[in-house]
Image (cartoon, rainbow, N blue to C red; front, top):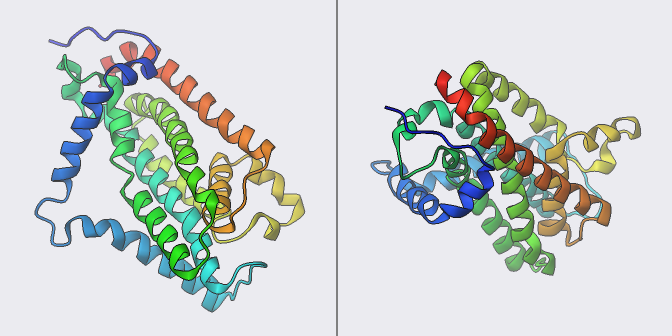
Length: 268
């Protein structure tokens, strides 16, 4: 028999059950790579392979030259945009089916349904952690360390908030529209090309630059690259957009999930 699904903003549920969320996430991380030959080493393999491919294509084949950046710094610049994209892609891909794949949660009186999406997002932080650590260590070793790196945790938190809010919405839509997961893969593929990861905004033709403003991830990617590699602070307007995106998506997603979950769970 299913327990009663109560309504209310999902952010309140996360705050109330934060301890349970962290414990469950930690336990799943411990078992995720159990029995694997490389174990947690896979967290390093995928980002590094993808980075090597990007570096080869844009540095060796296309011979991209970015003002103010040495070839080595350019590789880090790409990595600073690639790491958050990989994290976002994994978080959304895992979150979108989290409600459907965790049907047993509906009968749980300990772990609220609202937590399955934040749990999926937290479990997707491995590649991001690896990316940031590698960039910071490389900057320190090469003498390009910058103080702006201390603001990365703030940007990271805002990015997680935005992803969680958006994922809450997608996870319920997926309950009634199962093709959403496949569609999401196509959208992420387009987003990878349309985001300023391997190129700077200045390299985009003037008539196409307004399209960057319509890409939510582009704002976060550029901010990561500024803080981690360029040693610059995002402009005030840029910072306002990022905060607005995070607050808006989290507020809307939490409200939608909290209100609509009672209706959507009947289709699980």
